[in-house]
Amino acid sequence: MSPAGQPARPAAGIVLETAVVAGAALAAAFWIIPWQTTSDPSLSIQPALLPTVCALAIAALSVVHAALRLGKARREALPPSAWKPALLAMLITAAGVAAL
Image (cartoon, rainbow, N blue to C red; front, side, top):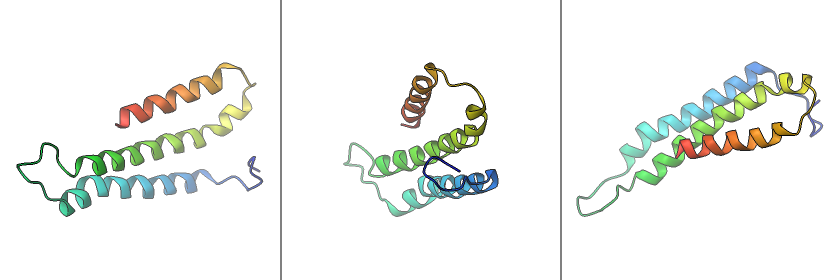
C-alpha cells in the first residue's frame, strides 16, 4: 500500500502513463503548437515559444516523475538518511531548470 492508502501501481502502468503524457506533450511541442500558431515579422518573440517550453517541461517532468516512482521500491529498501530529501529536491530543481 502507498502512503495515501491506495494500492501501489505496477511498473507497466507507470511506464504506460508516462508514455502517454510525455508523448502527448511532445506531440504538442513539435506538431500541434507550431501548426496552430502564426508568426509575424514585426513581433520580437515568437508566439509559440512559451507554449512549446511548457509542453517540453511537462514531458521532461513526467519522465523524471516516473523514474522517481519506479525507483521508490529500491529507496524504501535502503535505510533512511538525512541527505536523500535534499538530493531529491536538487534533482527535481535541476530537471526543471534543464527543461526550461
